[in-house]
Image (cartoon, rainbow over all chains, first blue to last red; front, side, top):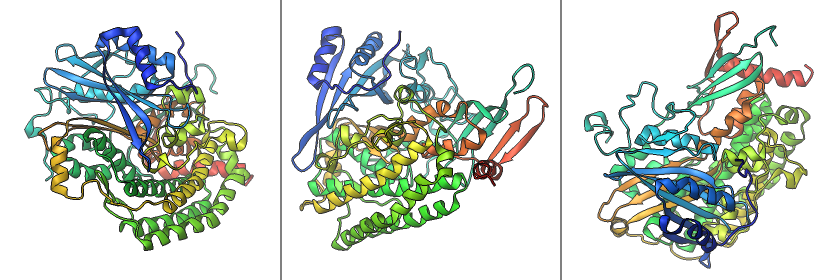
Length: 182
Length: 412
């Protein structure tokens, strides 16, 4: 299936994006927030950030819906070890080439339970996600299925791959492995 | 091409090199002089800054963020403090928004002039390189006049700025504007109208627009491929809400777009003029008022300790979109987690596209063309698969090859 590889010049209002997602995925995707981002001397709303929470099994479907609206520019993934689960936030942008003040940031949060730290890779859809997936693999221990290159990207070559630096449980670094500088 | 089975060499470049900025390894797979494939291995300078932030409060993290990069240090704190302000719902006074904008544009002027000079150096145009570094001094002086520092300005803070634009600093800025409008044109002409310069940069390191989209290229790299993307335009922040910024793309100036090193050069040169206009407008429209939303530090820290949420900020740094995401937890004075995505992180993914089919002599130029915050050519090991021998190519030798190509083009 070939997907678009261009940015649209037709922006949708953030509310319209929400209703498209709601229409297609119903309550499976939760709208956590739609933030107005203001700036300038008149405090005008210059863009929006949409925060969504999506179950893992609906994630690719949600991504394909975004593809219908615009090529979802991928910024990065952020994440954290939340105890029971690992949180992954995918940061996308829609309509960044559709005119002044038209951009919509879309952050999608996915919670992965500790006993199943897997996600489908999105590199077939967005090759630009390569480094971020590799980073989340080495830092948080997420396995991305279908990922072409699983080698380390930021950690040293002689790194013990059992240690996942950003984890806060037994998979993370031990206190004696951390060198305090101050 | 060899008779029979085509064999390729592998050339590692890096990881350490003193001439360019930071260490990174690139493995070039070459067939003769032609680059077949490239594999990038960063990580030599990963300092775990995001991990360190977990034991620091947001004010302390500003100083970490500032030290991510020497050239775009303000861009990083700008993005970080905006993310914190998003998480804690802090709004920034107008005057501070304008001063931040001026700082961001000064940094862009600095970054682009330095880059253009270094690019000329790479292919042996030393007079343009020296001119570039000479021109760069002016903006460094002005940054010092405004902030007291040439690097790591210490200007930004959460909810505002720590330094005002004094009348003396404003005079220095105005002097800089007329200086660049007078002097930068000479650099623009030698660099863009010189046939050899053009021959070295045209059709080199091409990134087609659809690949720029799919590989999520950002900043001048994306704009040089003809994409109209600029966060100052699509999602204005600070004073960009009041000041018109339109993305600079080659097709608007040259009528066509190639997405090569020349276009990346052109976009950056034109953006210097754009930045001068923005600085002028921000300076003349500088509103009166306070510099910080909360000048009392203990009160600000208490406010941040009470905040709960995730903040996200993407700003247009000189090299492109710089994204910071930060989580604050109520009752915890430290940053819970923080993610930084510098523009180079995004642009390096498209290096393989730019490199394929190019000559080794063009490698330094292509590496440079995205203005990497990490790059190097210290030494290269050439493994000749045909004879089984290996030799070490020094940085000087690689640079020599690049420069020899220019001389060949000049017919000398």
